[in-house]
Image (cartoon, rainbow, N blue to C red):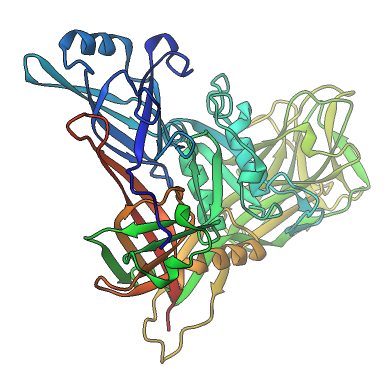
Length: 565
């Protein structure tokens, strides 16, 4: 039958020297794939798990001196350090070897079983996960609302597509907590939209990074989009759907005479053998018959004044407008503002409790918008206040003064004298002049109600596994996105999970994390035959007496999701 060549996979390792910690031009190398072999050190054993998800990967291997002497090993130890980079390849020949791991040395442990022998164990997390877990990001992404319709997103605003948010997180200096720190891309991460396998039109209308780890924010995006992310050995950021991976054309069998393997179209390069001691688990541990998605609050107008025939510039006075809510949950307030000239400071908005008929109570919110959020001729500018008010009590909307008569903002109003408004030259709390029959400055105050979506409507009295689960994502504020999210995670959540774990005598062409493999067990124990998604790969190597060629096999974990009835 067609099958793999009868030779072990061999590792090739490069460790950067201190003179070139990251560049791989000055290295110590172990490479038994070339003739003559390159053996700057002997490799006794190794385990290597490439990254497959947010938990990242890790390599650990033990080396000795090629001459089994202390002097040579002391020279090696004086030329490598914690923090140096390393690479690991795997293959049966130079032509078929693949780069499987890029790491950064975390620890070097030295054992001395005799006075003339040192065993050095090097541990290294993968470079990508180490980077993502140690960059702190800060930023806010909010999709522009249609004018006058705060519940409707502007379809022409693409600043909150998933592609754009990810690109901003890894490449924009202004999204770093420390804006002087290099971005992930500047450290070497490779971002390409072609590696982000998400609908380019998928948007998250509101997304926040409040001094959080980059890894955590990419995981939050995974949660919403039903995806998985990792950084490969070439530093590429990969984001792919959990169940829509590339087919690898790999067949794994437990029978050298298997009829399917004998006619496998891909040939010997794509057939591998399943070793003993496999493990199989069928489980409903992650199954839910119904999912309840709870997003952020949707909004409806509670109080408003919308006439915009006149305006007052904010160059001399702070201006205030009183309102009395009828609902307790104030989600957002819009003000109709324009500008003249080129304001150099932000538009400052405050929501303040009433005190003795003046805006001199507790300041509940102070928020700002840049000039770019305002149209010169005036438009509705939203401020997300998200606070609880007391229905029937008085509150004030205050806009701060800024600039001069030629460069400032202006708040639009009516020409009547039916509102309660005021002004102050001195700010907050300041000295206020209040007119109980003053102008109505244009505003809209919105109350919020929680967004709820259910998927699928499948629970009945005859449902045998009637598990429900609640998923809270307060930054999802529109029903379409929440529904899209629930459908994305439903591909795994509403199914039965089957997990295969085992050792593989590998095919000549290696498969990678996330690919489909066909696993066919017909003569050893539990009979299975199906397409599984590879979730984790661990490469294991143990030397022989020559310290160069030993048994090399692969441990894998692969998952099959099937319909639960």
